[in-house]
Length: 402
Image (cartoon, rainbow, N blue to C red):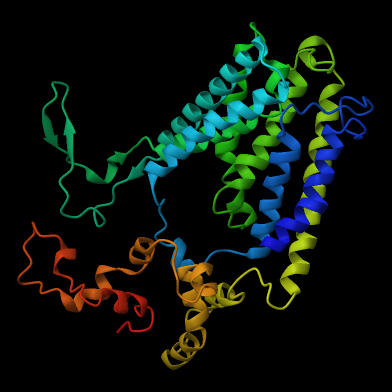
């Protein structure tokens, strides 16, 4: 990974930023031959990173099915804190591209927040609308579903199979906020004036809508982009860059977009997006392929494990003896992939021990320590565990399952 980042920054990132931000770059507004407007890095940062992530996900392959089956976010609290810090930092680096403190700086900061919040609201509403999950009777057996009458009293639902569950998710809002920040990045000062606040809202609404539905692309492409970097950064970076060609004013050495009669500008914006996306994707693929071929620098701990898992599912399973032999053969590398590369490379050490506990402890694994007849419903099932040798047992949990 470190080798790839070094080679990528030299071969991919630095040349692309030169194209846009150096006065002699062939896509810079200063050279004015094929001027692509990119105020703070919508193309040379976000499109580059998005299509690099797409290439990395393609080469890396899907995650272990055992990890994905019950995946959930680790800490929503940290996620919200990170979003707030990101908002503050984003205001600094976009407004800082003005290189001076002026009224435009204030306009840029306000527009940054407007775009981020509007995209977050749109993303949340889309997820809220599409999160209507039919409550199946077998899955919710024993759960009494109730509805509210018009007077506020509870009544029992007579048709639980048609009851739907909708919820507002903080994960959705934070994803939308990041999407809005990315969309506004190439615009920045080009749409920031005392009469242009509505433009940032348009950017956020369009970006939140397209960004949300772009997360579905990975299922069609069969690429496991775990963090949706391609959708949030790659696609939204392109959306923001194209919108600049429509809504940009004449400012910061630019000729503006469609709103001021510069009809050719959208062509330059499309050219910049296509060239940047293709160059970043192809060069990243080449770098990753070469690095993965070097002994000791493989991108995965066990490159063939997921392939064998998919083949086993397609073939409808194998015999018990063959499965036992295969599990015994792959046990060490599979455990390394499940617990993370830090565990594998640092000889069993962890940065955070509680993460190891969360990953390993499963009530079904410790069923022998629970006496079902003595546990009352009010007691937590975890209170019955014998934790005196937890450190030893949890480190061997993947070996000693009965």
